[in-house]
Length: 151
Image (cartoon, rainbow, N blue to C red; front, side, top):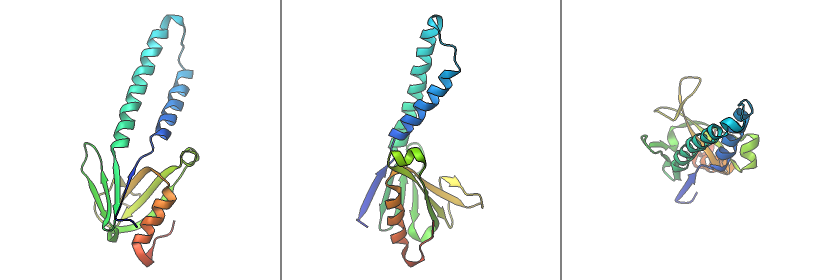
C-alpha cells in the first residue's frame, strides 16, 4: 500500500437516488396550475435537504495508511481503526452503486465503537460509497496479512 490513501464518498449516486425518491413521491401529489407554486417550493426544499446531506457525505474523509484506517466526519468524533482491531471484512455493491463505480466496505471490529452496531452485538465501521470498493477491500485485506477474513 502507498503511504496514505484518501477516499471520499461518491455523491452522484446519492443525487440519483434522491431524485428518484422525489419523483416517486411527486407521483402521489395532485399538481395543477393552482398549486404549482407550492410544488416548486416542495422541490426547492427537497433538493436543498438533499444538497445538505450530499455535502455532509462528501465531507466525510476515509484515510488508509500503514497503521490503520481513519474516518473524519463533520460534527462527529473521528474514528481510528488499527488493522489489528479488524475482526471481519466484507463489501457490498448494489446495482446502482455498481453503475457509479462505488460501494460500501464493512469492517467488523474486535473491540471499540464503530459507525454502526453489528447484529451479534459488536461494532462495525462502514466506508460508505467509496470508489472501487473491491480494490479498497483488497488493500485492507493485504494489510491484515495471512489471516485475511473472507467475504
